[in-house]
Length: 100
Length: 264
Image (cartoon, rainbow over all chains, first blue to last red; front, side, top):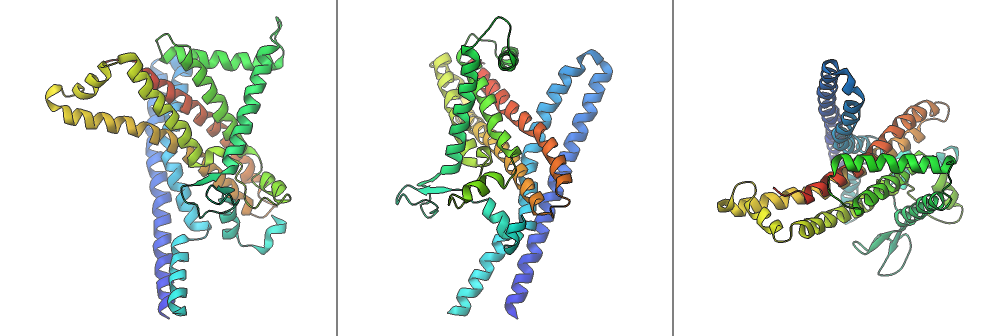
């Protein structure tokens, strides 16, 4: 009975961690892209002839913005869909203690 | 996926995240117990083959230069002209090495990233018939490859710093930005600033490519009836990402090397 509660606990914390990983990464990039796009539109409205140049620069910064968020989101997705390594460790420990 | 129904989706993902390794202590393939002394054969092979392919293609284009350019020569000229322009916009010193480096990085990283657009099961399945247990076909989704690239760039930064500024490099490290009396703080700041460069360069490329690959794997888990829709959307979006990341890697390399040439 004890092991089920431990498994439940590990799973609950993993779900929380995955949710936080995905949501905060999304939040951060959303704010970043919002600022970026807004400033880009402001710049183009002020000087429309600079549009193409600013667009290239905007994409460069966009690439800088979403890079580390991508890692975080994927870690969250891994926790959701792939084998949960924390759970595997807990199960291994349970197995060895049961065997001993 | 239909043949894989026997394994769970978790095992499917885990199988796709495993490298084909070579243990340098025992020379056993598929043995991950070697720790540091392990080669990721798939990353090495794919990146070297792609490098040779790209190099020979550009070499052929250069050899067969004609007055009226053909298709291959046109593509090569557009590429070289574009990279050359980008370098000269940012980097204002006379140097023939850096445009060549920028072109190499851009084309090579782009081609390695483009391996992501192959179906995730294609290479592993084909090679599986020849008895290869694991195969990851995207070299840049392996942090070892991206760190190899970025550490090379880091060494070049140090090399150019010393070659351009000679002893001025040491002076700059000790006296900028807070003046000579706070030299320990200046030194620590500079060391951190330099060390962050290769790490962020490598992790940015790795993160994007790893994320892209994993989402392709997650799409491959879906039922075959609907997987074309998210697969198509993500592939089209991914064409933008792979170009952007290759371009960013090149761009930041030029910027960092340009900073190494400028003295304060």
